[in-house]
Amino acid sequence: MFDWLFAAPAERRLLPGGRFRGPTPFVIAIMTFAMMTVAAAGLALSNAAGLVAQGIENRYAVQIPAGTNILPRALAAARSSPGVVKAEPVPEAEMRRTLESWLGPAGVDDQLPVPALITLDIADNANLAAIARRVEAAAPGARFIAHREVLEPLLRAIWVLKWLALSLVALMAAATSAAVVLAARGALDTNRSTIEVMHGIGATDIQVTNLFQRKIALDSLVGAMAGAVAAVLVLLLLAGGGTAFAGDLMGRSPLHGLDFVMLGLLPLALVVLATWVARTAVLSTLRQAT
Amino acid sequence: MRGHWQGSGRCARSPSRAGRDEALSAIVEFDSVGLRYGTGAEVLRDLDFRLGRGTFYFLTGPSGAGKTSLLKLLYLAQRPTRGRIRLFGEELSEAPRDVLPNFRRRIGVVFQDFRLIRHLSAFDNVALPLRIAGKSEVDVEGPVREMLAWVGLADRASARPATLSGGEQQRVAIARAVISQPEILVADEPTGNVDAEMAGRLMNLFSALNRLGTTVVVATHDIGLIASIPGAQMVRLENGSMVDPTGALRNPPPDRGQG
Image 1 (cartoon, rainbow over the protein chains, first blue to last red):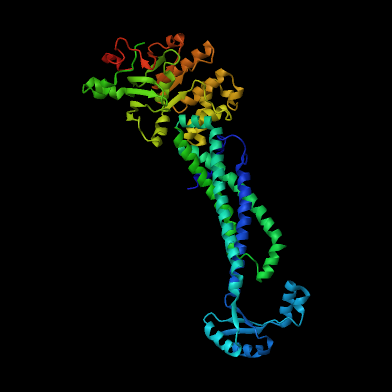
Image 2 (cartoon, one colour):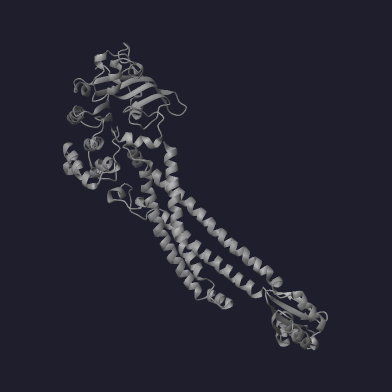
């Protein structure tokens, strides 16, 4: 199955020039580097979005307009409701600090009324309506705000970025294929006289194709390895800086074990793609030529 | 001098014993073959002939008569635009592309411009047909050395074509053409780039091959060359058609059927 990959020295001499010459190794190296970094970003974003969504899925803010006077009653009602995992008041000082960042010194003015807030975590199967009725009975006007609603635009943006990253990876794979087709056709053109002689003395299209397929496969392999090493170095560099920050936010590494496997397979997939594209392009060109 | 390029009607359609014998001896049969490139005029028209095994042929005619095109049809570099071509008893005019390499390996070709692969040594150029045929390096080394010695280039085995003289390149091309002991040897103006002495030596090589049973077809303008091979058959092309004013080429007497 992989006989074409192993050639005798005499067979290798049929195509002039040393190995790793021409644009293919460089194109593949650049594409591998770009694909791995973009894919890593996409996977990290996807993981972050998943983690955030998971964290806020069952979290609500209960706003009590009447203020802190009835907060204890509302808190007690919430805590005694079935399905409530956790109910904690948001300290008024914390809210005023938040307001200060928006309103300036006026935000910490005691004259400025602020509502009381409870952060509520409920179980997956909890009856939110029943909980809301009990809290409203204790604190009329209490309003439930789902964290998911607040963060929905952010999650949607992350989702878009994730798919954008995946689309970019796909586009880069397509661009790599196009570059390989051009490289294969260029190589065929450069070696036209050799091919004509080979055909003239009985070489099959497959024999000719194997020469070019082998060269492009090896060039791609070297390019992919170089690109992968560069990408890993950059990702490690980022891991010491920005990614560490993301990891802190998420409480763990932004990339998981399966992500590393996928990233590791990406250069290999690119080599397989380039080899297959080269074979198809060369065979197709040979069959059209004569 | 009489052509052995016989009317295909005799070999393909005649029920006679003589016709069957001729069909058996024919290595190439052309039946109403025409060739045009693109949408241009036909460069070859209504070619009907048979080519006997083991015979030496000269193909002559003025420049532009279609000699090289006819040779391309012979060595399967070109398909006819009409008519039928049988080689080695097989109809190949419309044979699938994948079938042709096996037949090409049975034909040796000496191109007018040699067509040596310039980045390969003389040894590698001569070895190419054997390697393409799948011979191991052990089976390649001996025959190639022997062939290079036969053409007087034993000491130039590692030389690249650019460092060889025209005559030496010609001999490498001939060695490559005959290394796999082809059943047909086709040569297009093989002595066009060598002096008279070398031309004589090359003809002796061809003649020796012919005596070993190879059918040889040489396209040439050189009358002296033609005279150097006694008993060779000659065919003339003019404006893409075979010149056969007496009809002898299309309907030769039975004793012309054997080369």
